Image 1 (cartoon, helix red, strand yellow):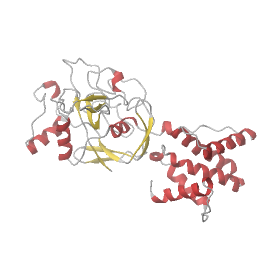
Image 2: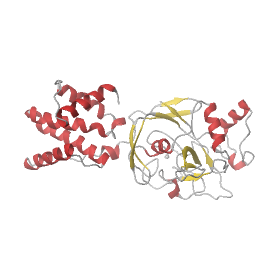
Image 3: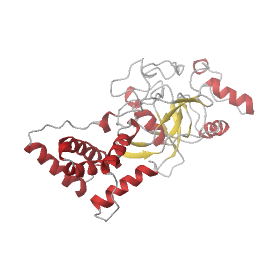
Image 4: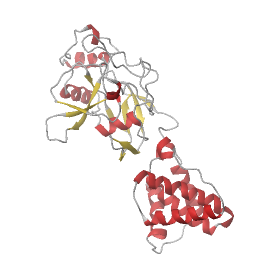
Amino acid sequence: MDDQIRALNEYVYMKYVDGARVEDLDEPAVCAQLQEHYNRPENAADTECVYLGILCFELGYEIEERQEELFRQAKRWLDRHKTGTGEAWDAVDDRLLDLDEYFEQHGLEVEPDNALASAVAPVVVEEIEDHGRMMLVPAGAFLFGAENDRVTLPPYYIDKFPVTNREYEAFCRATGYRFPKYWSEDRFRNPDAPVVGVSLSDAQKFARWVGKQLPSEEQWEKACRGVDGRLFPWGDDAATAEHACFGRDAAKGATDPVESHPLGFSPYGVGEMAGNVWEWTGTESEEGDSANVIKGGCYNDPPELLRGAVRLEAAPKDKFENIGFRCVKSA
């Protein structure tokens, strides 16, 4: 959030929540500026919109000719805050009770605001080229983990696809680093398939070579699920061969080239986050074990393991035929 928006939110809080004496601003102009900010898709999950809701509520009493319009806006923003936080706050709850009474007395119906559940991506998905294509994941809150906890992250870029054999080979030849395990196995050798047989340290060394790092579990999951807590990158529909590589024979099955699944992209245009290979993250086990979280499912997994909230753990030195990785960098 930029400093100007933060200052306007503080103004609303000081005047209408804290009851402090402040120098009055042009409040209709403040309202318009906050509306423009919180209506942006990338800010759809930002519960600081509560201050816009409070201001709309107060302006509804000041500008009678716009009262219904402003009250509808107030309910939208206050409901969004309450949905996003799940918390009780008198400054919100009291105003919502007054609004409900107003709409009931006037026989008005109000459509629910589903923005937190439906906002999944910026209108324009930004793609850059930096040792492979990367996609922007905007700043803001999202629903994380099996319990759909609300977590807020700053903006970052994430690789559009897992690091491929072609990309990892370039790293090995440029640096003299050892080639990965399973390099000689034909079913994992397609140049455009995800590299496998790399340890956590191998993945970190590649990431440093390209000036990036491994994603945290939270970064990985937001890039996969967007902000709305969806089951899979594409939504809640069951996985098919058009979505992901999964359900194959563990002994004979193979990974797919990374652009093989046209329906599998996440809200931010990130591909192959379900199936094909599990992916290393930089997040260590909370149990105190020497292990890191891996995400995404793989070519021989059942569809339920492809869900974005699923997490397994692997020892840092593990080099399996079903674990690869992708990288992130700050925006």
